[in-house]
Length: 113
Length: 112
Image (cartoon, rainbow over all chains, first blue to last red; front, top):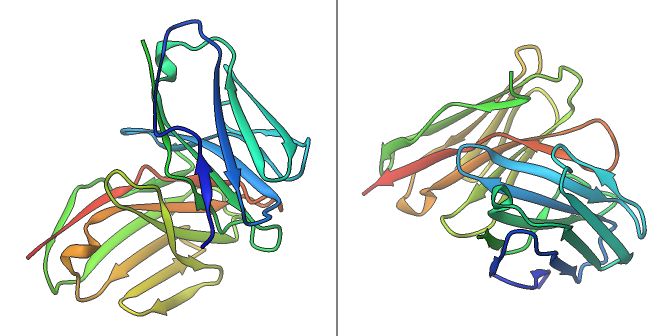
């Protein structure tokens, strides 16, 4: 059974903390994505990667960075968490030959207090 | 103007009825269009994709695409309570990396 695993389902952090969200996929997919989902704003793309060590900015990259040192792992980093980064974060992956076919993880609900 | 817009919900239909979900997009050069279903508290799941004008049917689901009008729709026939979910329209951009832009979603409730 194909899987995208996000390390935490719920996370509570303080303003100013450095936060790491981890995502691992076992499908040997080339493409990986980080989205955030907010009520009324839908799914918005933060960053994506189409290969190891490659990264591309999405629509809302400000305040975030990413790391992809291994094909199966894509990390989202909040350098200094702020309250407006409270959100549901969704990781997804897709294969090179069907890049549009996104497989999502179960999400991390991050609260920044 | 948003890149991908969906008709505002929520949408409520009785069991057995046809549910119609609509989506418009702004990039005339877009080639690939998708519908994702998201149950409450769960992550999105791809249910339909469509690439050329016309209809594409998969069981009770039909996706319709009209590129001239920049319009995509999803019809659910014989709606069931288990179809109650938020439906997200997504449009893939023209690069090969698979970046997709999502609409805000339409929440559908099917009443028994």
